[in-house]
Image (cartoon, rainbow, N blue to C red; front, side, top):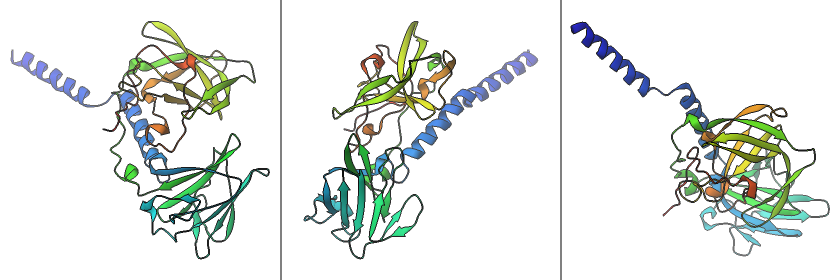
Length: 302
C-alpha cells in the first residue's frame, strides 16, 4: 500500500508540474503576443497618435499656436515655439517639403540626424519618414492622391497608460491547416475603410480550411512576400473588435500548398486603439458566420 501511495503521489506531482508549464504551442503563441504588444507600445506607434490632418495644395502652417492652419493639441504646448513650421504640398510633383521655423531643430527618426531649414519628406505608406522634436513626432503619407499629416505624442496617456491587450487563451483547435488557392495574376480586391474610402488591393488568392465541421475560405491581400487577411466573425462586437481583425502570413505558399492559419494570432487593427487611423474593413466574402474564440479580444472603454 505504501508503494502504491508513493506512485500515486509521484503521478499527481508530475501532472501538476506539466499543467503549470505551458506547452510549446502555448509558449510560442504567448511569445508572439508579447512581441505584438511591444511593437504596439513602441515610440511613434499607433498608441501615440494624437492627430490626423489632410493637407491642401500649397503651404500649411502647423504648431500649437491658434494662428496656425493646423493647430496641434494643447498637451504639446511648450514643445518648441507656437509655430513649428510649414508643410508645402506640390500635388503635381507628388512631393511634400517641410520648412521649419527659424530656431527650430528636428531630428530624423530613421537616421537620428538633426536638421534645420527645409527637408523633403518621404511619403510612402510602407516606410514612414518620421521627424521628431522631443515628445512630438510627425510624418506625411500619400494615399489615393491625398497627403495626410499624422502627429504623434509619445507622452500621450493612451500610450503611457496602456493596460495591455486582451486575449483568448491559446487554443490549438484554432490553429488550422489551410490550402492556398491562387487567383489569376492581376486580380484585385475592393477594400473599403472605416471612412468609406475605397482602394483596390492585389488579391493573391484564398485560403480554404475546415473549422467547426464546415469548410470556409478567406480572400488574401498580397503584402510583400506574404499574405494579409482582413476578416470578421460572429464574435465581432461581442468579445472581439466590431470592424475586423487581421492575420499575417510571412511567406505566400505555393499554389495549392497547405499552410498553417493560426487564429490565435488574429489581432486588432490600429483603429481599435486610435481614432486617428483609417483601417480596412473585410470584404463581404471574408465575414464568417462562425464564432472564432481565439486571438485578440476587445472591450470598449466605459
